[in-house]
Length: 363
Image (tube, rainbow, N blue to C red; front, side):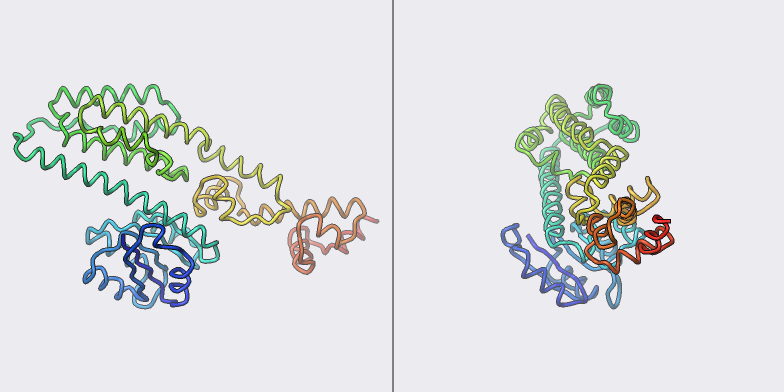
């Protein structure tokens, strides 16, 4: 496999090359580029990369421009953005361009490696689908052209059932659809392949909306074995659909959906707010992407995660001051190791300095 690393800051590219063991991840071809023009030339002259890690802002064009060009030219390269820009607008555009992950440069290098592994998994899924498609096309060359059209794929209805965890009704609907496919004379390998594409897209969309990596569903041995024979018949396709659907519903139930997960995160913060909690560690603990985590939390509670933690800490400090602790002791109990920062934040949130608060308490 080939990895392309793009950043106008050479030190960032050098850090990525030296810190991550790319060979152990399966990469044997590397490209380091420092502008959009160099990246495009490498694609044209040396072939597309399987995975690309790139910055947003760069001279002569942005990483978004590069990814848009990659998509417009039909390349299936999996992309990871590594940037200093914590912008929801950038992240939203990246998602539209089917980006694997949007990571801030201040994040641990382990976050980049996890995203690369996820990208590799997506490459693997695409390669298996392509192999099935090529095999099906070869087998259908001598077959008479299909007269009947495929029944309309009910993606929106199925996605709604999946989000609600209604596995029974959804499975029956899939079974009915495959029966219709068979009755219409469209249950050959081409028809089943087209169904599998639409079905996979539905599952992956719902999973990623809930911050769940698709490899938890499609990466185990049973899923691979069932998928390897899924195009043989509607019965085999139904077996694979049953397994993948059960696994998806289970993962969604364990994650609890977007709102319950955010509630779980808030509960976790309520119990650990005095500790050092990074966004990457929190996202990893709850199997969410960092940007999804930040956006979902602030949308639900009206404050960012750092703001929420700071308010909890200042509330704790006030309680300690009420109990007679001095400023240093109260700051330490609330998880602050910088007294100056604590005093500044205390006044910003309460409207008075810690010493003024102590005087008002004594009065």
